[in-house]
Length: 192
Image (cartoon, rainbow, N blue to C red; front, side, top):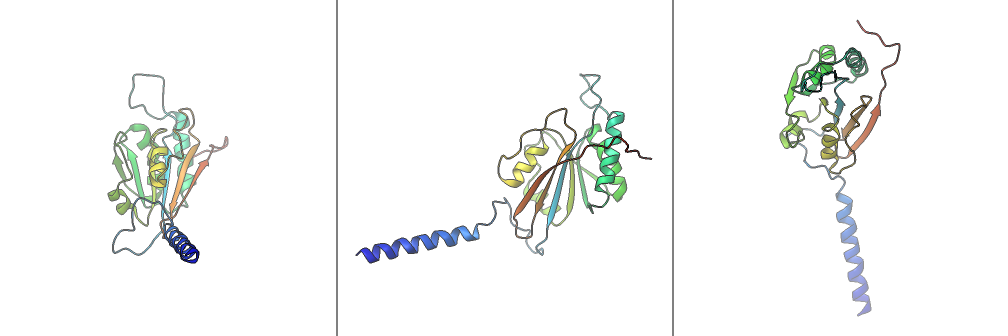
């Protein structure tokens, strides 16, 4: 009797271990049907410094420092092999993205910042296997990263912080690696 009980416990334990072995990712979607397994990389950057002199202006332009940062980010991303570019439809996000898009001869696809989610199944299928840059806001980017990670890891970025952005790599096997990157614009950075 004891041996049957012990054997049952061992079998249940083995079954539980084997189930956990195959649950390698909490990624919300499968690889798109009919596509070879590929890595997908997302960069989520916040718009550069905006003009805050008029508190009633809901769509401010970039400041001179913001334009300088946008050009610095273009230099940073020049060797990243970007394929797709997304931005909210605000002057500050599009102005941040223009020098980067120009470098790659790409086009900007817009999305709604107030939408519940950017990371939908359709977005995943459109971006699968690509290197994607998304320009958003201090409150949207951490949320998008959290959606991909399927956990609330990151909080909103402080309104005064323009140096932080995110990189999320979805491997072929749908495991996810994320990092928060800090890039300050060097004092001596100039652009044409």
